[in-house]
Image (cartoon, rainbow, N blue to C red; front, side):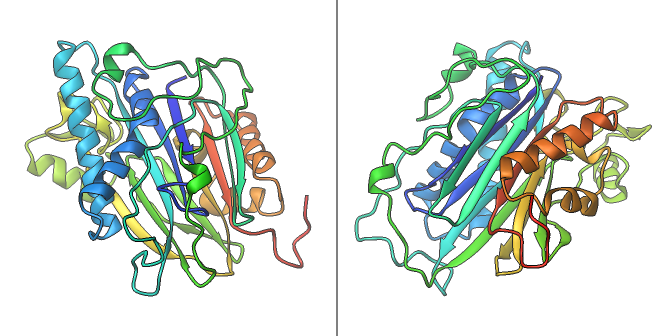
Length: 337
């Protein structure tokens, strides 16, 4: 099992905000595990450095910061840590009408975050969102060498193993002091991905893809790689890697970049839930098929289990991690399970 994930609710000291991410590792699990622990704190650091910057710019900066740290880790390990991971992230942010957070009190400081390490997680924040993720396999603590360059956070969970493991989401140390925003705020969903991990929104029953699959079979990506002096053979970069963007993979960084694709979506009453999943799910079901499977299931944990079981019953041969974030119950007219 080379996947990792992180769920932080509330995020950045605001009730109702959340950060959700899946990291699909390859050539080892070290890069995915490092990202599972330190990507969210890196985003908080970017928010601290430049709180006035647009969130897509800060996500882009975070992807590059994390990618650089993984390259440094590879150098310090004399090339022994050469793994990489694809990634999909979702940041649910509560904003005022001008796109800021004017409701924050004067002198407000972003609290540090802690990230739980586990295979199944579920929570509900102020009745506004439910989240759940589930994966099969083993999730372990990070190596001490990885921790040494990680940042400000430490895991609240220990090594977990087994086909079904559950733990509560890790709160911020300042959960009790989290700010409660006014009811008039907008809920804006920022998604970013590198590689073929995908985010799909259910809007009035229709699947809306919020990410972009970066694969060697994509013509734009293939051109970028050949322009940089590489080649794509049998859909693989230099005949090796099937994805064209990732975090880590330092030996191929000249071609396999960490730059993300980002989207910004203001949520409304038609938006029901979000699915984040690695390619182990999307290899066997399309966007609309996944939405149809999950839409009637009120409990996001059960929705994630349904998608996971569907993947394995349809012979997905890859690691599978699924995370469901529910924004509201199924609308009237949809049979609820």
